[in-house]
Structures are given as structure tokens and as C-alpha cells.
Image 1 (cartoon, rainbow, N blue to C red):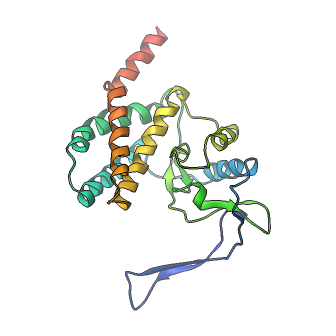
Image 2: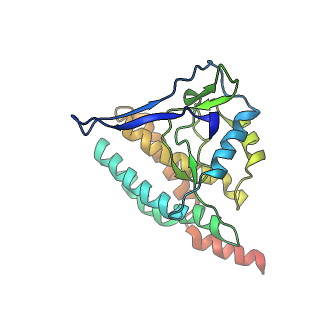
Image 3: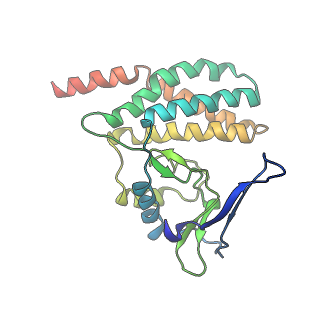
Length: 232
């Protein structure tokens, strides 16, 4: 991605301590400014268009990895009855309802390489080039929409709107906000694991799961019926 990211120089594991790893990249002087609203969304859209996954469908990948993360969250924090109660409809109804339509009616998505932790603390402007720069990535392949939700992120709605000028919202567009909440729920699982002594992250996780489960009790099957009704 050219100058969007610092270029890697070396990486590996210590020969004397194999479980300790290192990563070395070039030094890039940065400002304290938010990324430029004009160039930054275009650069992120370009990243998402050019880096795509050769493997699983997005629904399969999201389901598989989120199950693992949620199990780890329970191990780290201890069992939570409401999370356990919500998990079955979350995986069996909510995820198919919101992700399976992405591949229907001649539409499809291929997971894109995303930054994975794209908030204002991990993005800035290069002092020398005057161009946006991103760093401290937790990259994985995902639906390109799954990057913008968290409320404290200063890379927020104006950036989102400009981004979608370069990379339109996926079909069905009516599901966009709910898909975004689904993706934010996965982020909340990760944060609940990382910040296990902060109750607020688990509360956000539960609230997101509860809202989605209540909104989509009929799952993908109900959506299919609604589409056939519209076609008749």
C-alpha cells in the first residue's frame, strides 16, 4: 500500500526465547493530527479493494472466529448466564440473517484485508509527505464495512460517509446499520478479553447481542420469506 503504512524491515522470533517475537519497521515522523478527510477514506477504500481473501465465505469466517473469541471471553472473565443464553440465537439466527443476504440475488463479497483496529490512535499524518499513515494494525480478512463503529473513535461519521463515496455500502443496504452493530459486537468481545477488569466492555457486548437477538428472532428464513413476498 505504498506510503499508507510503515514498511516492514524484519520480523521473527528470538533464537534463545522462541516464544518471544519481534517486528521492525521503518521510522515515520508523524503529526498529532487526525488523518485528512479527503485522502484518508480513499486510501482505506483502495486497501480494501486490492487485498482480498482467497478462503472462506465471510459468514463462515465470522461465525468460526467469533465463536472462538466468545469462548475465550468466558474463560478469561468467567461464565456469564446472559451471554450463554444469547449465544445460540446470536449464532443461529442473527449472523445468518445479517451476513447471508450479502451473497444472494447475484450479489457477493470477498473479505478484504482490513487494519483491524482503525481508530484515531492508530492513524495520523506523515510529517514529510503530508499523506495519511496507519500503524499498529491487527489485520485480518473481513467485510470492508467492519471498521467504523466504536463511539469513542474520532475517525467517525464524516470519514464513513466519505469512504462510501469510494466504496459503496453492500447489498442489502437496509441492513447496513445492523451489520455495523454486529461487527461492533465482535470488537466488544475482543475488548472484553483484553480489558477483563473493566465491566463496561462486557456490558457493551451483552447489550449489542441482546439488541440483535431481539431484532432478528426469525433469522435468515424470515428474511427469505419477506423477499419472496415482495417479489409476488
